[in-house]
Image 1: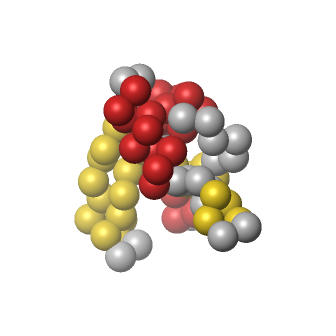
Image 2: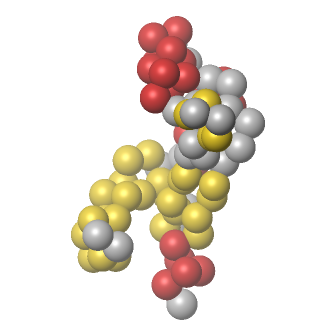
Length: 75
């Protein structure tokens, strides 16, 4: 991970007035996605490899991660 990307993550996610923002990775069919207003038919795949995204958060110094299995939540 580039230093600039790491600094951006650290700047945008971290300690906030005594609490923490915990990043989330939403997964459908094993891929990182973002749903538009919770609509499964309006999903955007933003990374094919959730483990890579998790490692980027870890490399930026984050200790917690919220992993969401949207396939399981849908059923």
